Image (cartoon, rainbow, N blue to C red):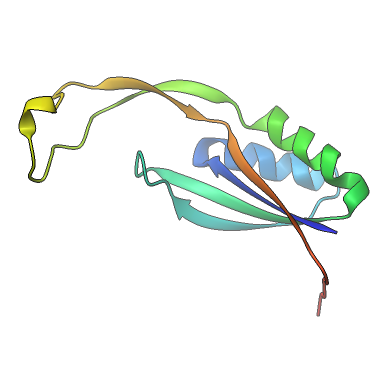
Length: 109
């Protein structure tokens, strides 16, 4: 058995959640915040039998896409302001960061 932890952008979370339910995967959703852009994320915890890991990863890949987004940089709170860029910068966001962890035991009460 494996535990899949997938951190996805909030814009992708509803689509991913629906796709997981359609394919009979149970998931727990946790609200989280990204450190780089300080924007909302959703972390999915999915318990999966070993033979279904590839299917779960494919569903995550199909429903969490990269996109470009303009981001206003945070002004420096000290330090050198010479390197501060005061205009929005385009960055790539979205996709998913996925961890697959081995699980020794699983209990559901």
